[in-house]
Image (cartoon, rainbow, N blue to C red; front, side):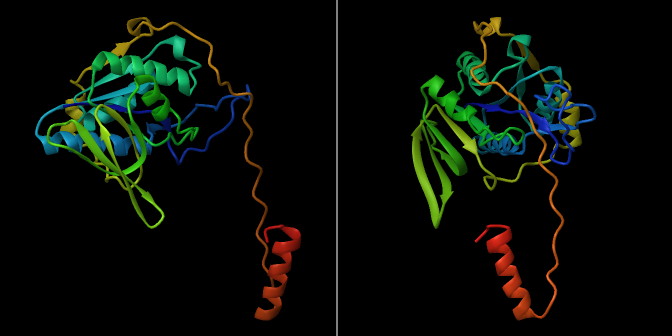
Amino acid sequence: MKILVTVKQVPDTATQVKIAADGKTIDTTGITWIVSPYDEFAVEEALRIKEKRGQGEVVAVSLGPDRVKEVLRSCLAMGCDRAIHLNDPAWAAADTLATAKALAAAIKQEGPQLVLCGRQAIDDDMGAVAAQLAELLGWPCAYWIMEEAIDADAKSVRAARQVEGGLEVFDLPLPAVLAAQKGLNEPRYPTLKGIMGAKKKEIKDVKAADLGLTSESPQLSIVGLQALPPRPPGRIIAGDVPTAVKELVRALREDAKAI
């Protein structure tokens, strides 16, 4: 069984993000780049499926500049068999739809039985690519997956997502696209053996022309970025408890307009 996992390189959550001089992008100076955490759940689940079935292939694919190879190496170190890097200036300004079109073209060439994605990337929080990808492929799609089980014949998958008070369960025919949620599993740490072995595994560079695609203008563009305003200082309400409670309620109602 071949499983393809889409991953995205994003700034580390501990990074202090600054807006670049153009006002439309972030300043990448000094940024530490990582695999988007939700994508790590997808990678881990793909590896577990392969291990449980005792056979198969897990392929990681990502779109972006040369530095994206770092996160693909991380996926290979976790246990992915090989990786595909969609790397072309034609995708420099790719929005979610252009990204999905490129990924869909690569998936059609690879012919996997299952595609796993993170529910969303933590940089732009769009959460759109998995659904767009499924639509372009004509495959069923399930989001926010916290459980999955593939039948013995690899013809269908049962997926479940958490809703208020329980789990919502779906049966989907394969091939399908699943978007992983936190709680699906606990991603493994790459071992030293895995890190060393990753250096020998293939990362295939793919251009737009290799997929039969041409450059197109994105339908979504960033007009500008703005930093969040500084958080106002906290306020300590003095006095005994009854007085403080009355003042707190008044402040929430009249000053903060919160109640």
